[in-house]
Length: 109
Ligand code: 2BA
Image 1: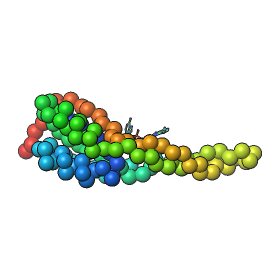
Image 2: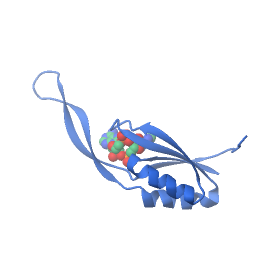
Image 3: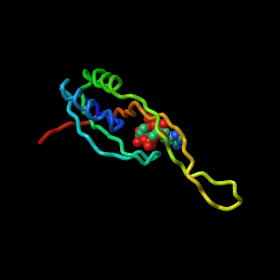
Image 4: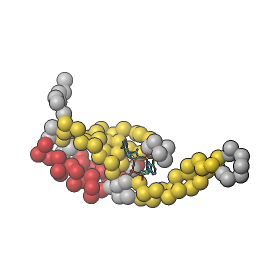
């Protein structure tokens, strides 16, 4: 068995959960925040049997889109003073960041 930790954009989360559930996967949704953009995203915990791993990955890949977002990072100004000004930078986010972990044991009590 494997545990997938999938970090996805909020906009894709609802459809992704729906498709995974309809195909019989168990899903837990966590509300999370990305360290770089400091914006909300969604992390899904998905426990899957090895035989269904490729299917789960396929659903994630199909549903999650990449999007452009503007990051406002503090940048030092060249005024001679030690001041910082927000400078907008465009970054491409997603589709999904997925970690695959081996599960030693899985129990439900
Ligand atoms: P954030 O940390 O908010 O990052 C959002 C997007 O900003 C990233 O998209 C990437 O395109 C860009 N980015 C991140 N760090 C950067 C940096 N130091 N310099 C320039 N651009 C940077 P994704 O790579 O698709 O990541 C989306 C979200 O997935 C991340 O949100 C974070 O919550 C999570 N994530 C990505 N890689 C991770 C990792 N190695 N460990 C844990 N979480 C990760």
